[in-house]
Image (cartoon, rainbow, N blue to C red; front, side, top):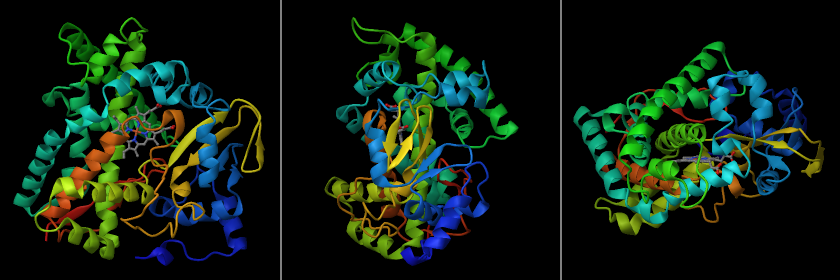
Length: 427
Ligand code: HEM
């Protein structure tokens, strides 16, 4: 595959037609498989597009950065949008309006500060040996069976353990975490079915009940606050503010979810993309070599992981609400205007990235927005990058001739881009 297959040249007239047909609540099936031609049409013809529901859809890199930078004009607080969406008193509403990502300072600042204290560079580096053991164990099992499913047997099995460790969730209790996470984040899709809503609400209720018990245990037996995020959140700042019980529980749910599907999709998307870009796969395999020196390879794998994040960003959409009159991309937004930030489009903007539809694993100056930007930039980005490096690097070193045995199955979501299944054989 090459860039011409992904974004064929488009006339201005065609670009306008595609852009004006976009409705996030009624996306055609082909959009989920390949949204990039639609993104390109929007970037070219209407980069700040007014949607049928009156909100604005932004696709240019520079416009996204401008919005992310201005946290005074653009709020992350979602009570206005989510109250009619989930309904007063619903578990989904309580959860999504209490997590730090959907709040402004001061709640955001308090929670983020506590979290970041346990996600230091040192704390993350110390996770690497355990991560290597986990990944190698998964690879052993795959080798014994001659293959498996890239998502089920590999990509999704990694974040659940890493995030489980971060909050000290006992191994035997990690089973339901992935389904809860999928259901709760799935409820963020632009259009929600009654079934998705029911599963989302049920998952928040079940997860809260589970976490109440875990928190009670941890209060009795605190962990090391240098490493244990839960202990940090329980203890709060020394002499400073404490989180309320609701803030504590809802933000634990968020951290368990935030690093889950996103990281699964980083790993799954990367291993599928390499099959579609055999020249890049060969290059990476040659560079890794038959007897990898992992320490020496770290800069190269880091560069490659960032390119996977840019090229197939796991989180394609973000949201903000204008709280004052403000101009973006030459369009005036009134207070209350809802804005969708299309990370997937910004990360393919030719004004920022050379040949943006090409996967180039040695890309330099790759200032992609896959982790967002500004005060809400992903708190787990170093952890996600570490997981990506270890998982993708060790997979390729072990199975250089892996191949997909059936077409991979997409997750079918606009916000979170990834695969549900990708069956493969090791040779
Ligand atoms: C490839 C993996 C990941 C991707 C693509 C990703 C993406 C993002 C993005 C785009 C945001 C910003 C949302 C916004 O501004 O509205 C964000 C926030 C956040 N992410 Fe991640 N994330 C990943 C992994 C993780 C992991 C592993 C963790 C867990 C430690 C994590 C924890 C968080 C938290 C706590 C926030 C909220 C930060 C804030 O509001 O200040 N993420 N993430």
